[in-house]
Image 1 (cartoon, rainbow, N blue to C red):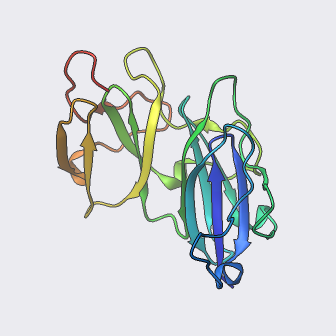
Image 2: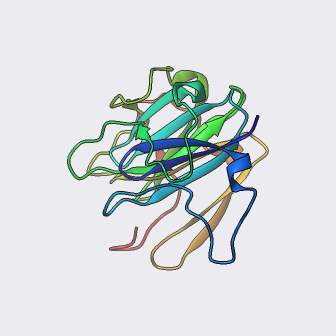
Length: 191
């Protein structure tokens, strides 16, 4: 059994059997019902045994088993995956089927780190989550996270159009509630 697992910026998650997407139309088909102002932040192909992580702009992460979300049809809106503070949003969704990788987090002012998945406790969906990276005045908000291993490279692009490419092995592994290190040096006013 394969599923499409989706998450939105308002913290809603949804799992739909892949078979429901087997008859595409030229104009597309609805994958998820969205509330006003909400949008999709991630989608992954899963097999029913994945762990899902949602990461918010305030640097929090919630991790739960995919089986916490029952399958539903394409038109459905979904269920709560993460409880968010005022003005906060989910920035990304990660889906992992083992604990071999690390979570690389990056903030708007160019800081980040990597933390082993095992350091993120599994809780049921719908909670506020645990700190993934501190969102301080220095760091700014969390803007992205990806699953990585030592063989990967990442690219970071600033609002000023500067791109850097770096080996993941060069980025320090650090605990969850730390601020991280500089990933990209930014010019004045850049994010």
